[in-house]
Length: 93
Image: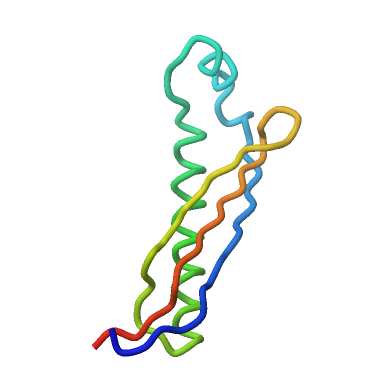
């Protein structure tokens, strides 16, 4: 590693439209997987990684190490999702 830059962090809030998956609430009760939640999680993860990469490039870095990715649901019916991602921007030779 040639040099280390600042730590960087990104937050991505997403509203999950449960109307796309009417059975998501039932799956929460009886178990199973919700396609809506899975798609929204993947979309939020991709957006967060992309934004983290953009921040690193803006700092003159060419890599991010020590990435930590967290998900949190909130709202009355857990209809909102917050993805937070952090890491350290570095220059690697």
